[in-house]
Amino acid sequence: MRKLSELQQEIESVRFELDQALLRQDKFDNYYQKSTKLDQLIEEYIEETERSK
Image (cartoon, rainbow, N blue to C red; front, side, top):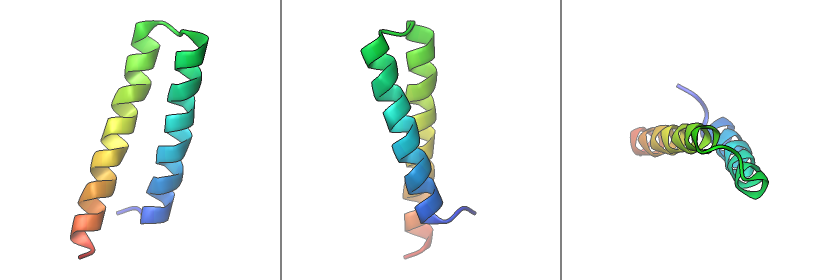
């Protein structure tokens, strides 16, 4: 179980990477991988917030 603050930091980092990939017009596969990672982190964050209620 990770701390919410750690998850928030990682989400922001991956979101920044995703934005940069879009600006660089990276290949779709690279962009998709970053997007999928962000989705997973957001899901984990939601699950952690639900558990802490």
